[in-house]
Length: 104
Image (cartoon, rainbow, N blue to C red; front, side, top):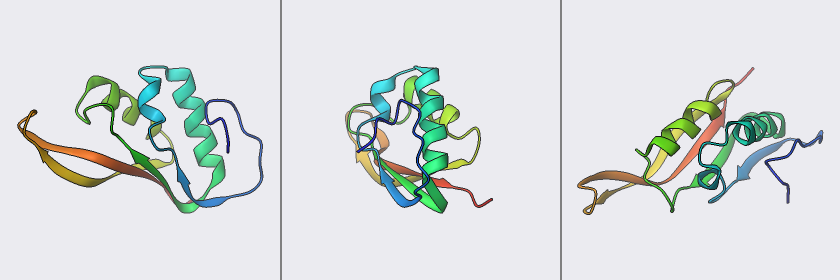
């Protein structure tokens, strides 16, 4: 159990990290997003995956797209999962997604 928004100094590496419903609460807090990205990059093994859910916001919202832009600036790549048709939005939406650490 870690505070992903504070720097983590740990040598252990993980194949999978779950950050369910954490990222969407950051809104546009760039500094915390950068700290989180750095922590994830340090804690993941090559090809490690960050599993996220997105139950609060719309995946096309400005906040989500901003967060995705910050998190993918270095070694993480975005992967979409769990698409469904959202009748209120009139389009396909995502209820979950992941980031994968690129191999060095």
